[in-house]
Image (spheres, rainbow, N blue to C red):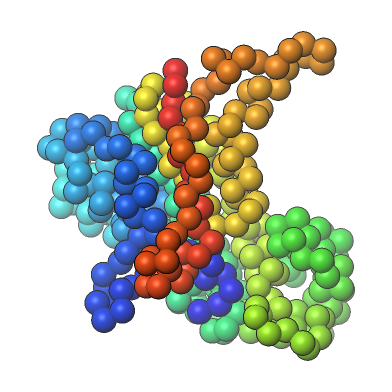
Length: 320
Ligand SMILES: C[S@@+](CC[C@H](N)C(=O)[O-])C[C@H]1O[C@@H](n2cnc3c(N)ncnc32)[C@H](O)[C@@H]1O
């Protein structure tokens, strides 16, 4: 397990191999207030922990639409769809959810459980882990785009430093970028353990609680997968497709994600005056109403799933 494990979702219950417990399960299901004949979209299928709970609450007229960038996750979703006519799937980013014709009829609920899944972290060959050596990939969808190793090979020192600072909130971003650029002149950086060792060397000894590469790996992952752009687009897609009264539930795992979700649900952008000097938009013009306060995992959940410790659930309802 590595530091990126805080970005995660499901735990295998001790002693019950293969039983997946999705993070904040009961709270998320309550938030979605599922109608048996409703249409629900899970934009982050993973291994279907939350999706299975939604499906279990749907009647024969309900529908479950699922998306994931990860081909392994989508393979599982395809098996579900083959068995159950209520399920449809699409291999794509939830950023494109409004472009999927299945959502055109309008949605009663949208769930986004952000970040990466336990299977992604636990497979060294996916390249998310700095403790289990693997190829430096980090793509949720390895069939598209540039891997972390390809990006590190071509990015300028300044660009690397900026990514580490912006997406990892890494104070030593410039020093780490300098070490990365010096190291790649000796040999290409292609393995996760190799990058972790370069970062550890740049930061020196003295770390105890967190591996020194934690923030660097988080930053690269967010950048390689364009995670924050996807969240903005996915939230907007949810606003376009949710019916009045439909629920939006989003689980974030770090402050960069949570800030975007919080501002979106509060309608910060919509409140902005159309022109300088004009009053802000009235409350009645907002598209969402925030439901309750943000929710975090309780002691009972943390005892069986330490990966839930940074999860924050926010919920909003489409009002018009
Ligand atoms: C935290 S896991 C979700 C786990 C799931 N809720 C469950 O209970 O099994 C996040 C999943 O979302 C996927 N993902 C992350 N960002 C995505 C995006 N922009 N579009 C589609 N899938 C995404 C990842 O590939 C991963 O499978």
